Image (cartoon, rainbow, N blue to C red):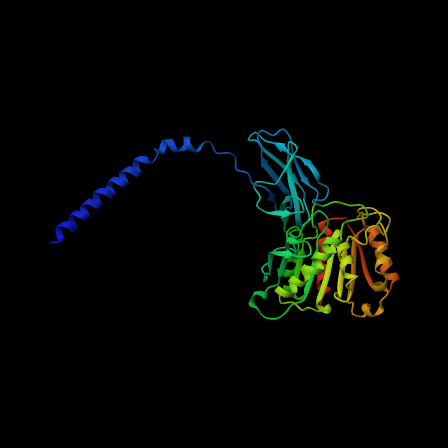
Length: 394
């Protein structure tokens, strides 16, 4: 009794499905119409292009622009470089050869700064974003076939500042296995940069990966916090330090020791920073010398100690006067393993570094001070990290 109905249903479904397919086919444009709907294809642009001879070619498609420049202050001798336009509207310039390393850049198109639209690699600063290019050929910071750690972007709530903040944290290879504790190294950035800078243009994760794989450095956790607590300014009396120091002591350090498997004692804590981060280091490490066995200062010192520097001379009691009791405490120096300074001879803060080192030596600190080639650049700071990290926790 049910067979005729079943056969009718199948037949009806077949008719319906044929009608649907016919409708879909009629809705498709003819092959000859497809190109007109897509429009003309523009020129294919590759940027940046790093050649085997370490020359870099930068390109941007801007056919209606009247003037385009490459802004690349990180690349030695470049600054701002005019680009030339070809018949297809692509602006281009080749620079180099350039030493191996990471470099930030952007384009200025008719007075407007823009990042490279063909390059997904970027590096943040406190108030803007840069495009990032890497020139391979460095033994200590190239991406190698070795075990790699992880760099995480970590959001936390700062009770001290009553707002959410961010830091980047490097965990070494093997940490994810969930076994054992690690020493912790707090690594601070400079003025106008941010917590992203050390792991992007600074190559900190790759530098640590390579050092650990070669047996030159102990596996460690590296915490890279945000040193700015608002828009960047050089205020009267020097850089504003208090808010970050409160955030560090009250929130960052406790957060790390609660949420990561780290040793929470002096012998397993280190801190270092470049430029503003070096001044932050001195504002944190000296008043809390019982908490840190290692501290490093890259291209920096006590701002104003040499009569200049960012913000000019400090107002009120000097750094030395404020911290005299700690500076003269012989017992605290007994557990101090390393005080390490490094600054380029062409750096505008070289006299600040020299004066700070002399002040610390006057108070009985055993300071290692390296005056290197170069200026106030990431070229030096990556080298300093590569030299400083192997000395920690040995």
